[in-house]
Length: 400
Image (cartoon, rainbow, N blue to C red; front, side, top):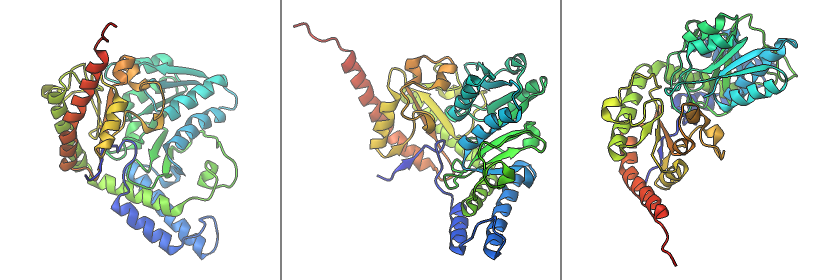
């Protein structure tokens, strides 16, 4: 059967627009953007055009865009760079408990160096209450606009307002949001924003960091003066031009694309409710996979559906779907291979067993209704086999 790709939250296939730009740029033999000769000028023009496109997509000035290799590097640069710029002052850093590992692990590393880390609780809906931010009185708040596992959308503007009461710098990780939500850095009232290329359908190894003018940030690497001295090293102008093209294509498709993806997810959610009435959707109350609850008031990105299948093993379901040609995930790809069930779901009040039962379906620019139909064609027998194995394993052994 044709492979069905339903793991866009881990990475999107290369968009046609990005491929065309990448092919053209590579064919032109663009040189080093720091060189003064004609080949360098051509590479520099490609790079700065990409910077202008990315800036326009989020309402920023081109000089506020720093290109990186992706969101993980950018998140590290934000947290460690703000801390380094504090010149020895102990910072209070606040992050929700559901953040991406690149934020949580970096924040924990800074705590080991003497900074004050406040891990903020989230509710059963996965959202942080602004009062918790205000109570933490942070110097730096880092929060994901869209959670990579659950798709839950944080109220970033309200959280930023709460953080500003203590004079905090505000960082928004928009890696998972950029393909499906309109971004406006001024409206978000943030100082720093992380973007990831491969989540948009750009080449892997591309990304950007918005740094509001006047925001203190120290480099973590040293070398050349590229990217305002914040990210030394020769830029991959061809790949970054493709990143800008992918972002422009994603932006041009909104909001119609978001509505299309929401319809796919809603249909899948309703059908799963029929197949597994005891399943649970992350961000909603237990049992809320019913058709009546599909239009949940909890803000969720349109492309992600994270479902816990009661008493079943999520990793086993992912493997079974893979054998049927369906690519999905049991959580964030950056946490793949970890023995611990999702920290995101556990922070939302799920038990370890419930968190271990989760499967994440995520869709994007090339997803179709036929993809969802193909998933639904194989899912019933996969669930039936999993339930049968569970029953066999639970059956008591005969006495000898």
